[in-house]
Length: 399
Image 1 (tube, helix red, strand yellow):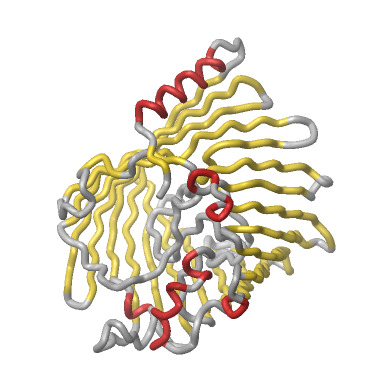
Image 2 (cartoon, helix red, strand yellow; image 1 turned 90 degrees about the horizontal axis):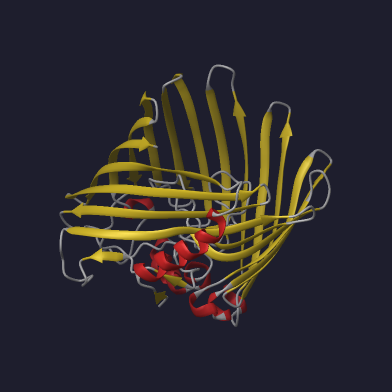
């Protein structure tokens, strides 16, 4: 369990630290954020649940010079839910696990098991100092860490990835890290860092080294990472072929203490943007951590790939097509799907985004799982038949 820090202690640190910058003659301060209001309907096996969530994000950037800046972002989530219908143990990455300390996630209620319909949650998502020199960029604090060029599933991105059915993907989750980037050439870079877990424990932390270069008209990246006593080696390729884009991202993970849990993951795909506002893509994903037998899906949850490696898909072979179409400059439609090739289940998604007025957007969409329902929930017949159908709308104000 992460160390919990009172809000007052965080505010004291922030004000004391920011005060050192505010007296600089050239200090620039930028504030902003957004409010996103979600209304969500979940359906699972004839059961229905309603949820309303507001997402307030406040941002403050303090820029004392051209070579440094300090960034803070705080989030507040009032949430109402009439009941919880998710009784199936679906896996998912522990998005907030790479943090040394944190605020108490829940303001209200004090007892997580109280059964209250209303909850008030918070998240200190950025607390970051970045400094630049002629030879490197150094960033320390709570920041986003993500890797890979694949569009749907990134085998090398295991720190804090989103799951496919995450509705709000605008901001990557902040983790506690020290990161150094050094240019190698005009288009090359060394990227290395340490990502800290609870109480700086090595068995809860990660360290990475990534080298990026540009050769033969191709972006090429090699990566090595030690995470939670496991080791990952990755490669990432991306280039243009004619008018299309193509990518290949792969990772081999050596699990600590159990060679039978070693696994390989691969994503390869292509995209194309037409001149009439239509953008399309397709991606294939292979997961050696998965299984081809639906009756064994739940057995995998306790394996290293799911507990430490941010794997959340049960199967082995997936195809993920999708497209976005600009109906007008103010109205955009998208549709996509994640298909489990072996059990033939599908997780489909579709949605509209409308720019109502300046800085105000309205979204409406759905995630629907297609697959036969199993008579025995503990022995599924397919993967995405386990997922609830989710219908949502949101109104978003940016400032």
